[in-house]
Length: 426
Image 1 (cartoon, rainbow, N blue to C red):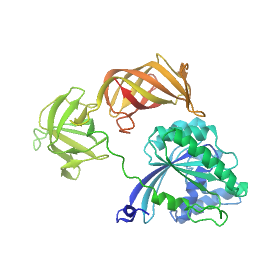
Image 2 (image 1 turned 60 degrees about the vertical axis):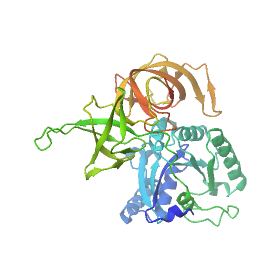
Image 3 (image 1 turned 90 degrees about the vertical axis):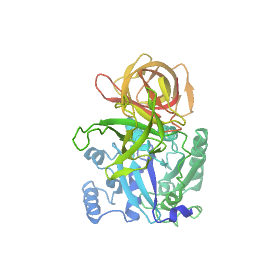
Image 4 (image 1 turned 45 degrees about the vertical axis):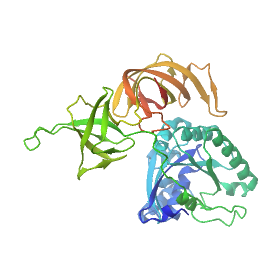
């Protein structure tokens, strides 16, 4: 195990489940929490009562994460459930996301901040279309660690050939998406085999159980490919006698680092100035980094408003009028078409956008692009070009998850209809 994982302050691993419906994601998370002693007595008593009332002859650990009434009634995950737990080696933030195709948009939400994906596959059914869709979305969202859990191995008599076949197929599929770190484990989430403790029923498997594997994943931050990014959320002018001249710009650091004395540029206007102070609730500091919420003070009185981006002078973002992006369409009401008019929200700025061109639609089974497609329907993924009414300060998503991501909003209903990852800009 890496020495850094033995430090006094455990590192944090952000996880998201992925895979098709009924592959056992919620049961696995429940088993992981229960067997690692992360549950309370009253929680387990309530789950035992609910399991009995539903006629189950076992304790349904999926109920630990399926919290909505409709989830419990249908036996599926609908919303994203977050669970927090800790071992002596590491802290975990785990997003249990839905497998049903109807709720793919919720899976995107849960995976958008994850470091690793727990990709579940039912050993009886093998790799499904939704498995591939979730795997592709995980890779598109910047996840570079896949933990493949081939579940329900007890129902195929712990057949090693079934595990080998699924492992080979998913590893090959992930490799085509640029994901090289794929680790596979045969498990039975229902019975706890190879979840926290190694199982004697898989004598041919010589790797670690799931929890041990998760404790050892290296999540060292990728090299920061951007300079400091600070989207302004609010301008603070208290106008009090004890602060007669105070002007601060509040927000959350999106990327890079900001320090007192740094020369910065305010975009999209392009004016340059210097950071004179960084204020927090607990007092002034000299340096801020993601995801700290701070207030910046600048040397000059400039036209800075909500939606402005304060950036260090190195590796500037592009104030783009047109962006190229991968988009996952999330609207059941209507498809995305060339000529669609939408609102686009990027960091703290919202402006109008025109779908100038739908360049291709992805086939999640083959990873091929249909260059003749003219629309995206619910849960489909495509490459689009958007023309913006107001320039947005963007980075490619592979360089910055925050300044490279956006959502699309229906102008009439204000419903979120799409999520996008910037590829490039003009």
